[in-house]
Image 1 (cartoon, rainbow, N blue to C red):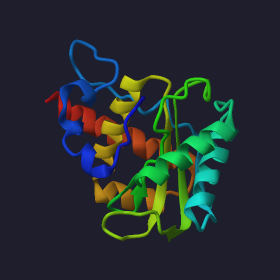
Image 2 (cartoon, one colour):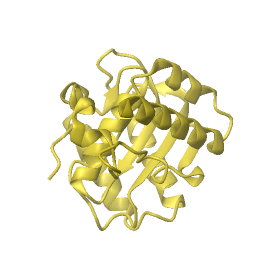
Image 3 (cartoon, rainbow, N blue to C red):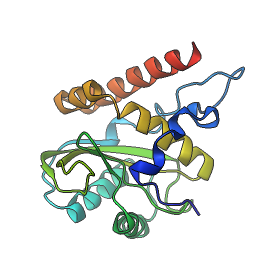
Image 4 (tube, helix red, strand yellow):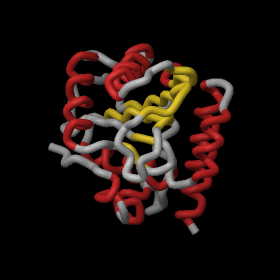
Length: 190
């Protein structure tokens, strides 16, 4: 089982050497997100207005990537996880994910992105509305923690969040995430 990951429990994990990189090459961090988020996994104009409807939208977007095998189980798991404690972070962003590994639910580890037309109450500690949502589903516990740590570090960058809000298409979102991660990895290598 993977414990729940409220934002306050993530503080510091993004600096842990074991979680800074994915596939180490000569002990160096490398990008791990570029294969997880694909253009089919991006929705930029979601009309979700509630926590429940945005979770459904995230699962629907993952389903359209052809990586999802059991949408009902995933939706139930993500709802249960959000009922424990919100995955909303400061800055209007959230990373919903299942509490436990569900390796039969997806064919490949996946990250999808949904931007809502309007922010919705999602339980952020700062009380702000949330409009940027990343659904994460991994088949391996260690990989799940690596991706969460990497994402938490990237999503602390307010300029990056504003850039996400201005993206016009899914390719631009994927390119933006790839560039931000490459910048982070380059910084970590030095």
